[in-house]
Length: 393
Image (tube, rainbow, N blue to C red; front, side, top):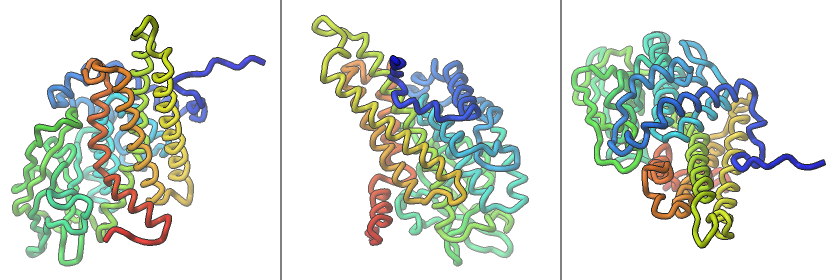
């Protein structure tokens, strides 16, 4: 019996493992992005803006992408696999799109959904799920990235109110957000607050001069005596473990998302190698180019298998361990960025042109390599899980 032709984009036939619902998510997101975003994303990246973000937010809301793994309040309550697949398709177009969806759903919305009061959930989650209100997540500070427990943002009591002072840095969506989930030190430890961005004393200056995630809104948050009512505190969030729980949700989306960027770079390299002729034949016919394409495909599909396994664990009754998420984030981002770099070599000088997606993905992944836990922090987390010895301090 003859074998069917191997699909070079999916040599392990992993897409056959998806359910009809998951394929529908894949196809819906991919079609929308192909039609509405792909023709413009290189220009937006070059100009350093995402001018249609409000429109995109509402369209993503209509597709159920915002908080899609959350239950109730207008959220889609879909599987971890479905959410991961959506992240993959978003990042195949641009990491900035997946970052927006991750911050909206897995950080800001998740924090309110998991730790918020009934009133906070009713006030914000339906609008955020619909894309009518954009959220951001204020944890990282100018001097405190990998060590959030040392944050200097403070929240102090003043009668029944809270007064917040401090700065947050590298905040996705900050300048366009209607609500910010802000983490601050109190006399009782780290606590979270739901901060309307029109509150007096709150500002979110745009961060410019980025060479990565250029089609994404990145901001500083400045809190200068921001007065909030007692009801603004997230009642169930106690200690630094609360924001770290939110980060774990976002990291899961990254595990999937970067496989989309890697797939896009691989496909661009394979297409180019089949068309570009040197020494009388396509460069795809040369052994060294084939080795690059094969090595890239191996790592891409191992990364996809890792994402699929973590999805099944996340959907299981036992759930997924934070160290397992670290495993996926560490491996998949590291391999995705290497795939982009190798793809760049296949395209030669054209590899640095925005006429192709490769250098854009490579630049974006430099940010993804750092945010939601640096390579070093995930190595240390895995090292502790594997040996039983903490080496953080």
